[in-house]
Image (cartoon, rainbow, N blue to C red; front, side, top):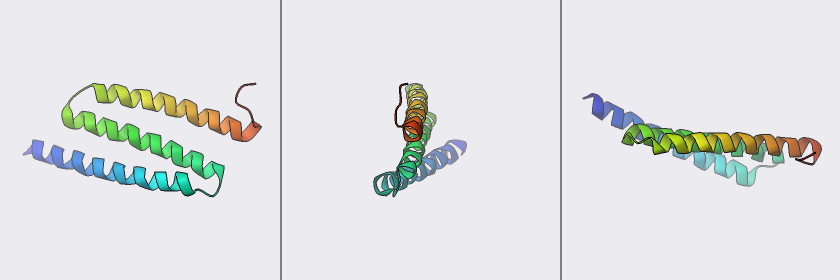
Length: 93
């Protein structure tokens, strides 16, 4: 019984994260300002990371957790670089 509940919860979470990724993609493409697009990109990589974590929970394979960790680190660096670019107009001083 608990395996069915776990499978249902993971499937529902995957659907919700995929829907959130679609909404964030629309905001990233149609955002009126650059700040909105950066926030949407930040939301997109967080949702992708969480989607990979749910895939890892559902399958029990560790490769999904490692990929989520890499996406999290690269997404953070990208967000900081884009924010610095918007503030100063340059990334490297």
